[in-house]
Image (cartoon, rainbow, N blue to C red; front, side, top):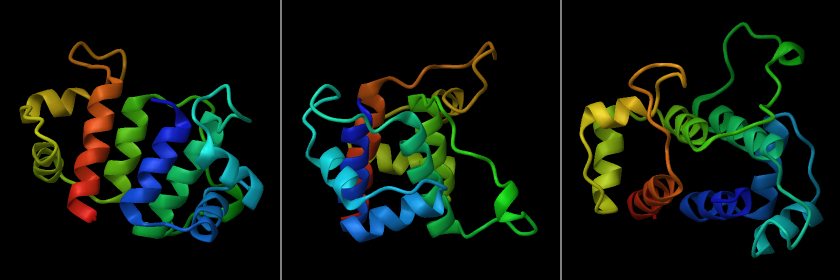
Length: 155
């Protein structure tokens, strides 16, 4: 999945308008313009327009975490962690899990709405570190199904 598609799907799930998207990017540490957001939302693929880079998407997801969970206690805003420069489907899934404060059972219920049935052990493999022997890469179809389940749950 490309970043444009992920951004569009999350926007749909939570019914965010452009102003809200811009505010979320800012909460995540990136300033974006209305024109950039419109361009990203209307892009058909990565070659159509300026890229919504991994850094921008990470900033958006970090802003979503701040919006849903609040800022970390005792952390100086100037010293907060910068957005990642490389995102994987696993890290996107992890950020969504954190933002929505989902437990394994909640995630399995969301996936079952999208007609995906996996075990708790298979799910936990997605959240392990890449070097771990039970690490499993989150494929595009799995992330797409999770976002579809979120849409069914929250819309």
